[in-house]
Length: 244
Image (cartoon, rainbow, N blue to C red; front, side, top):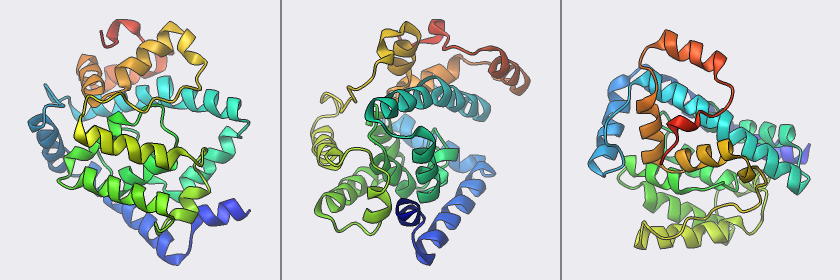
């Protein structure tokens, strides 16, 4: 119950969560803002050809079901952590981070908070995504440094969720190395047994980076009905769509 209370926070924290939810809903109804963000990522070299909104949505669902969820279940099982309870804490701390797996509809601080909430399989996607915002990487480094120093305003709620107490120090080191050299080796989570599965390994390789995710989305059908049928029938990552 203490962890649940820490994740919920006080009245000010709850008001902030509701405001972020409302902004996310408005973004979905404002395609021009998503296009503006994609334009910025294209300008920075992360997007070669922009996918459609439905391709992004269904690509995000594939990333969630083929990589994020199975990797989390595998990791939590090895750590002796309840997957269901941990997901509850994440939803209570920031609901938006769970309903927008791609991050394209999220505020800058929602993405920053998400990176700090979870010991990531590989955070490079999020660091690339944050460059939608002119100060995205600046703010990530600043807030992670506050977590390490124990001065971040959300330190109690994030501390109630994060699985590894050494994660923020390692993340801060990686963010600084990435900013100095984007090709620096990523902070990859090693405690995964699923990599022995070729389909999971191909999915992880494809969704690890923003360019890989965008390329995958562009290989999907553009029609909503075709995407919906595919979601029902494709239950394993299609390795033919994997990043080479």
